[in-house]
Image 1 (cartoon, rainbow, N blue to C red):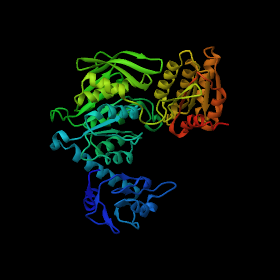
Image 2: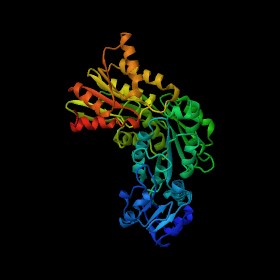
Image 3: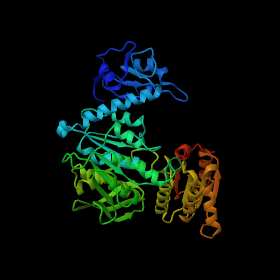
Image 4: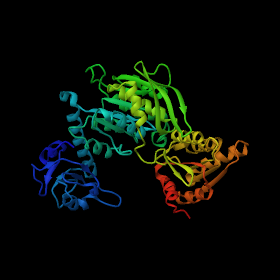
Length: 482
């Protein structure tokens, strides 16, 4: 973070110094909520939890090097006292992050001003954020969250990793309801906003796709006007192939840049090919230039993620050749997203971080492309937060898994029953001859997979976060399957 004294942090956050806190004590970061991550110069934010309370670790945090504790009640350590319980601590983090973002992105810093880039969408946010960060890293120090640090706590913590040397902040913004993305954009106002897609994720919370589109569009509504400051105006990067995203052009005063596969896209791909290893290749078209791209990421859906990253790179002055080279060099960063490993001659694809109908379809399409004469096996858990459409959407995924030709479909948990039912109906109709296996949990799924998997097979594992299906791959790799 930007080095600040405790009294200055108290002024910014509206907190009060307490305990033995020295007003002139310098804090240089990092700001953390896990006492195990504390280092010299840290600020430890104490939050409550179901099992542990950060306030109980205040003294240990200071002994480990923290300058002070940001707390919602007095503790036996130097501290900054926030009113309002955990909400007060979170609000203090947001205020400190906003100060950091405003300071770093101040146009008065000239070439040293940081670019703040926000990324949202129903699926693909984390992978695209990782791609953008890798592609533009060569242009200056880049800070991006690890994994999906995209909520009201993770977002400011990511911003507070930046310092005066940071040139790019690439931030993933997520929503559980209307107003959430708008709030995150107030914490760190982006100049460039990327919207990937509008799908079915969190349908149970939002009610319908129109509400989801309204929430995702809060990102483009937060952007500054595109014409106010030449070279510093707002830019909305929109997926031209998604009608709901394309329509967001009418909701922003920022300049719009479209990416996609159609001829009217500003940044587009032609000649898309899915290779035998499941990675995609295409020709990138950007500002009149073209360049071949060979991605190292698995899945045809990565083409759109790559185009979104290319559009951001274009806005930062990169040409087609440089962008293509950077895209080709990018590797998977965040875990459990199309993570490919080999075990006993079988190919295992761990895409278990989360699931919704769109990402499930992408995963199964990738499974079919990877198999190509090999036996495909799908281990699928339920898709959470789909509301009234839950049963129908699960059955559709079961039908697709069957039509993909899965030799074995292992369905995990009672909530995923619709997947099994959809596959079995497809079998009764004469379109599938594979096996459906119902199991209770990840451990049982690993045992069922081990009993059926053989050399040459291609296995994909996917489900919503609550199912923790990444354990299936872990158990297979460790040989701890009974």
